Amino acid sequence: MTETSSPENDVQLVTSVMVQGGSESDMNSLPEVMEKLEGQGLLPEKLLVDQGYGSDENYVKCAENEVILMAPALPKAADKIGLDECEFDLEKKMTRCTAGNKPMKKEYFRGKGRSVFHKNVCEKCHLKEKCRVRKYGK
Image 1 (cartoon, rainbow, N blue to C red):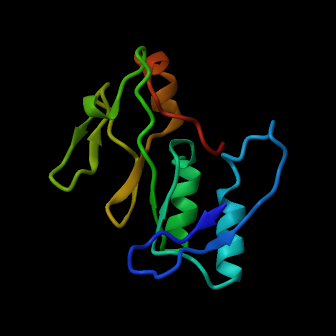
Image 2 (cartoon, helix red, strand yellow):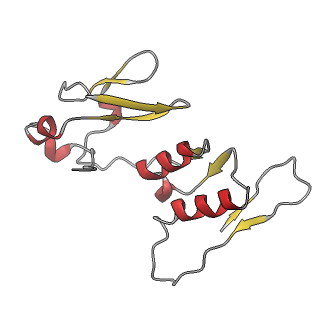
């Protein structure tokens, strides 16, 4: 369910509803919700979501529609390396991962983004098992 949430509105309105079974996860439903809102001309400037909706795919989908996605950060697993252990420049863009590798490209939109590393670099990395990086694409 999506709804308006602005103190400037006299009334808060439900703008979208998706019905599904209680045993189904809705964590992958954001692209469908965004399409529905876009079709109705109701895309928000900012979309506040629960922690599970803060995936890279959801950030990209929102950025494509010029919507700022705001989700709480996922907790750092005790056995994983966090972003706080990587190097960043003054613009908060990653310059090196914890293992000292440089990203092959960086994608940023409105201050949010991600760094992309070549799979050959990550596959040979001695910190591979502790890394939070997820494989996307081929």
